[in-house]
Length: 273
Ligand SMILES: Nc1ncnc2c1ncn2[C@@H]1O[C@H](COP(=O)(O)OP(=O)(O)OP(=O)(O)O)[C@@H](O)[C@H]1O
Image (cartoon, rainbow, N blue to C red; front, side):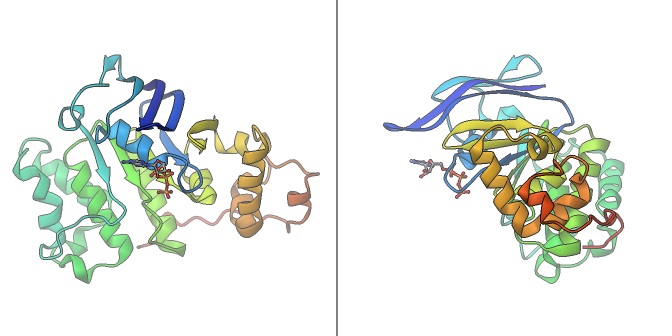
């Protein structure tokens, strides 16, 4: 279990995060959602160890990691721009991290991961010959061969759309379940957070606005900020949200009354990105 205990962060006089306390279960997928500047990236960087805490503690399975270096925390992040090597092919990128840590995965584990992420037929292609979804899967594979104790994803779907996005979501879920890998995802997109995660952490102005399961956030938003933040996005993408949460929405709210009868959720599990 990952525990954040009364975490605060200031840059100079400016407090960016204040008194963040929560626990995340092993294998859980949690999205960190909030408007631009609310402190999402700062929180991710504090967990990763890129930034020092001002106050509070970060504890994993009872071990206090608050002052442990980034390298020794054993976490890993997939950045928004993938940070792949364009002159290497997909296989070389996946294996790159193992050069300094050759025993992190066995050859069989690497092959299993390649199959799990559907990358076998792309292994000999150079990075600039791959689609956005394929690059994202290579970036995830390259991180996973190092067997991180925690997977952090920074806006993993922002460069993708439609069926490719759904396919990557499905794969992130499969990886988290199969490897019991606690996964934290930064996003500014409510639809993404609500459809991908077990629980969503909504931050507003550096404080927790709500930390709950998607259905609870939809049916029982904690305050006006959530109501407006979620509902305004629902108005744009309501059909997608409703496919998943039609039963959770109160029947009498203005938003739900404007919405057409929900269609069954379309399964994209076998789509190829
Ligand atoms: N190194 C720093 N020094 C000073 N202020 C910083 C630093 N890093 C972040 N901030 C400030 O902290 C606040 C939160 O920034 P952060 O990047 O965490 O927000 P965010 O929610 O990730 O935003 P976005 O969605 O736009 O990336 C911002 O007001 C930002 O200006």
